[in-house]
Length: 360
Image (cartoon, rainbow, N blue to C red; front, side, top):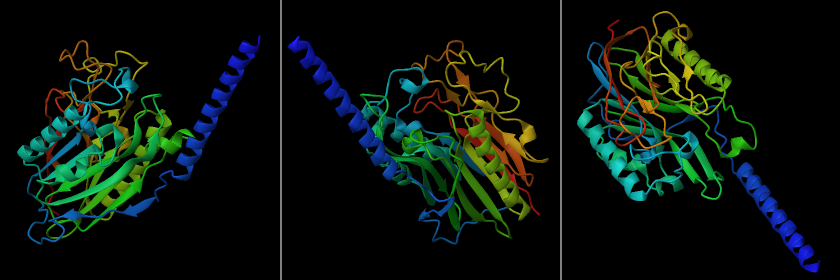
């Protein structure tokens, strides 16, 4: 009987210690929670800030690439626990190889502007590699970075936790850039989930156009794991911002990972096979004012579900079209193509856009 009481006592003590430790962790994460202001200035780094040799030209095609690089850890060989897989942290060698591949693709793309999402700077999940600095090493132009996931520790999944995360969106631009800012998006999560979760944003960069006006670039990565209300609140803020900039006479291009299916995507080709896993929202053209456009390649998948390694078989793989752009009425679409990279370096494929700013 004494032995039974001793076991019960030990179990109670362990429960109290675990509960107290978890409460202490939540208290620490609450005290250190990332609380960005609605609008914050962003540093412009790189050579184009100081150069006066290259302005955006109306009438001349621009090449832009948007790509969620999955922090270098979500290549074709990987799965992910939040999508129905098992992996929490990919091997370091895979992260290094994938980031190297991403940089080589960017150089070979000869893009004027690159909009990247899920770029880690100092995160446990990517072995504290400064991916933003590495990707910018061979870029001739300016770079801007805005965090949208910044926390001292993600206590999930237990016991192999995600840990410390600093990640965000990175814009690489070959033109003169005069100003950059981080605009906070609505956060759909409540305390305590909020303290170790994403605080998404728009990374806005302003490029003067030769002859007058500005090209307003928006790099974005909208909500994935939330209700439709959370996604809609973020879309409303984005669209209101773009409309206000266009009303000033500016050109507007917003690109990145919308985590929502684009208009005109054939649901028979990209149908959701299992609604218990990630189901993207649906973008409607009615969301935008007259003359504005959602733009993406509706024939080629831009993303895949990470419930298992990529098989290459569209019949067994959940594929999506959730990456692309919004263009203002004073821009002319030349082409848009999703590069079918076979998800070699990320669970997303890059989306390449050619666009012309119309002359006034």
